[in-house]
Amino acid sequence: MRLFGYELTRRPAGSSTVPAGVAVGGPNSWFSVVREPFTGAWQQNAEILAPRVAITNPTVYSCVTLIAQSLGKMRLRLVQLTDQGIWVEASSPAFSPVLRRPNRYQLSNEFIEYWVASKLQWGNTYVLKSRDARGVVVALDILDPQHVTVLVAPDGAVYYQLRPNDLAGIPSEGVAVPASEIIHDKLTPLAHPLVGLSPIAAAALAATQGLKILDTSATFFANRSSPGGVITVPAAITKEAADRIKAQWQENFAGANSGSVGLLTDGMTYQPTTVNAVDAQLIEQLKMTTETICSCFHVPVSLVNSAPVPYANNEPLVQQFYSQCLQSHIVSLELALDDGLGLTSVPGVTYGTEFDVDDLLWMDTATRTKAATDAVTGGVLSPDEARFKYFGLGGVPGGNHVYMQQQNWPLAQLSGPRELPAVPPAAAPADDADDDDDLELDAFTGILAKALEEGGVLHG
Figure 1 (cartoon, one colour):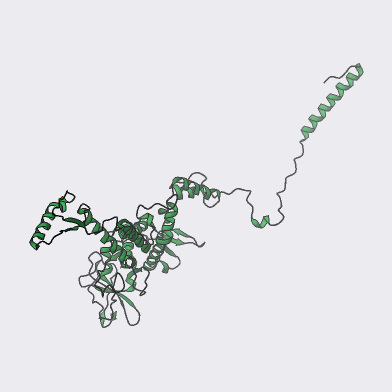
Figure 2 (figure 1 turned 90 degrees about the horizontal axis):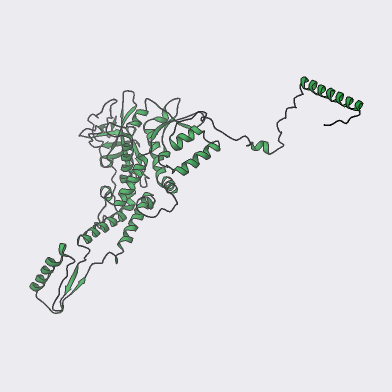
């Protein structure tokens, strides 16, 4: 394929390396993105906080790793859509292996964590596909976003310029590949549909302020929390005398000697000039930066610091974390894999990928027991399904059926006259029972007649 007069090459099937390709050129083809911590920072020569620097902020690091590890600990499984419209776990020789082991140097959880971390730091995740002779994807390599450039042809076709990458098998001269060979997962593209925006763009000022606060605090406490100051002399002195007094003071009372008792003579006084931690409300300022960064990542503050949990237990907090933060990342990653692996184009069957959310929402023992009991008595799950879902236990004899009590009636029958089940008629007494009754009656009649003849009284 030729573009702009250059030959485009794609990664060959069944090969671990990409042959030499020519970069698709032209100064108008490249996306140039100016990243500023705030509008006008470039004109003011303000420091731009790059993602690799921002990650050194403890709150940014906590948010990124918390989100990435939360997705990494959920099992990614291949599912199939049944005729009833239900997704059930499935296995396929074409798709299951690459989901279990995406590449030769990463396990599945490491792959997912790296995917999400790249997306959170840079706003974009680029994944290069490797195919076998059948054209089936057999390996996925996540690329450094700084080494990938998105290109758009005049007809709207999208290509990706890749810089060298030994792990992914990209040669030293780089290569350009079509969009069909790249999985591009973007985080909320605000300025351009092919350029995602990282939360660090919004949290840059707060992250910078937090780093400066921590840096200032480190310097402050390295000096034993003793702020600098000035020595005031009531009378005029020469520069030589001032330098001598300053040198003596620094030698005797600065650094390791700070906090020692000083002696000032001739009416000299010492006045601290820097604001201490209490006056600067250092803790409150640092807390504000933490809350701002967490809001940009949509992470509850209680999950990244020691703030009190607003609920009686952690389950509602995890539910909040899932709904306002993780769910969008999960859906985006699942759809990107479905499309990138070609799961939706298999004839005769519908495949997909799905994270097992139960690995994230793990309840305490009492809550799990109640949930399992309610699911079984409510006819939602069988005992075996409840045992496996909530406790990881195997089945028991007779536990594979869903149970429901008999007194429950359909609403349609309760809305009108209800026919009670017919009661079977009582069985007729047996003939031998009638014979026994006749014998007893005859015996009683004979005894009564004999007693009357003798004029006696019949006693019971």
